[in-house]
Length: 181
Image (cartoon, rainbow, N blue to C red; front, side):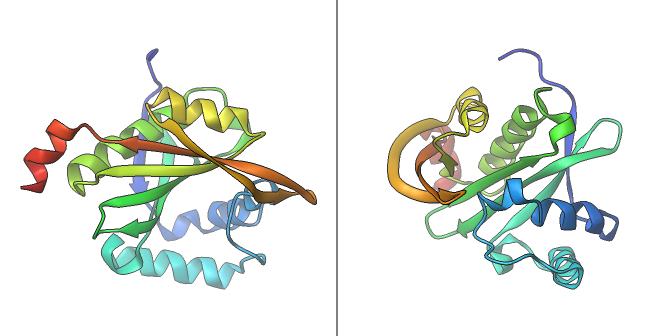
């Protein structure tokens, strides 16, 4: 993998409210989301407040702000559907349009994988990617995720059914055995 840009993953702060509101209600990102309705600023503020006091085990999700060094927020990366019993979680990545194609998503995803494996002793991370989202498929492949399944007609985008490509990153067995036992 080529040299990646410097990024930092940090916890959400109240100052991220406007950016979070923008991304969560952006039609481009919501096509990949399970949110059925636009989210209010109040709901986003409550989410940030919860994330400041509750951990991934309580919330079953964790969102990081992706910052391009020095301290420029460029998007979000999150773990959702967290299963501590099975040590897996789904990954979501949202990079603002003006910061794409700079390797920032790749650098953030690599950091998240390293952190999840090391800090949470995760066995695997996975993602559902729309069939026409080639850039996202490449992102996951660059970091070592493998496509393990195709789910027919999983998404509806613009009234058209689309398949979902399932990508998984199963962490090396030798690393896991040291942490599991």
